[in-house]
Image (tube, rainbow, N blue to C red; front, side, top):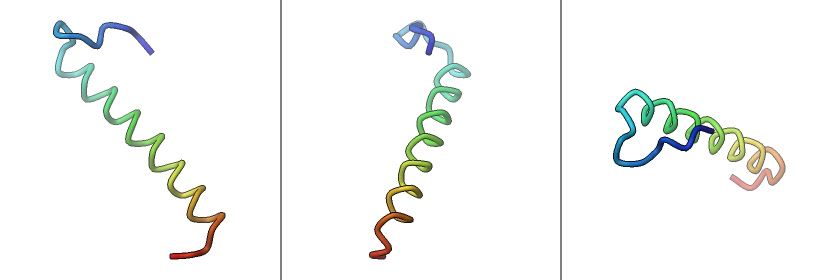
Length: 39
């Protein structure tokens, strides 16, 4: 990950970073819930 995520980070970079995080969290969530079938 690039380390330009400060005050100088552009909007596009933030969107890209947030989408990346969202994807990671979703994958972890699906893994977790598919392991424990306790929904």
